[in-house]
Amino acid sequence: ADLLSRIQPMSPQAWAAASQRLKLHERPAPAPTTPKTTTPTGHAPQGSTPAAFLRSVMNDPQAPLALRVEAARALLAAGLGDMV
Image (cartoon, rainbow, N blue to C red; front, side, top):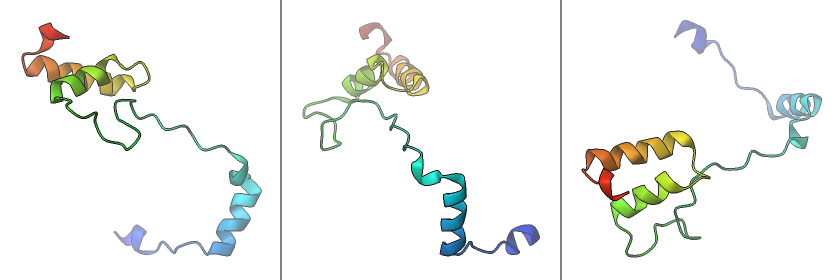
């Protein structure tokens, strides 16, 4: 706590100078890695069940592997592993 209490925020001018030196403004933003299991509005498709959602996450090759594994675990825990 003593160490953190001595931290001072960086001024906007110092941030601008540092980002200019590091050329942070030229780096492209990383692409989002969210699974493609939603509609353009960000909601699950209408009529979708939790099991259908988990299956779509598990089968989405664009979804991070950790999310796909968690979806598979959730389906197995719910006793729906044989339906995937």
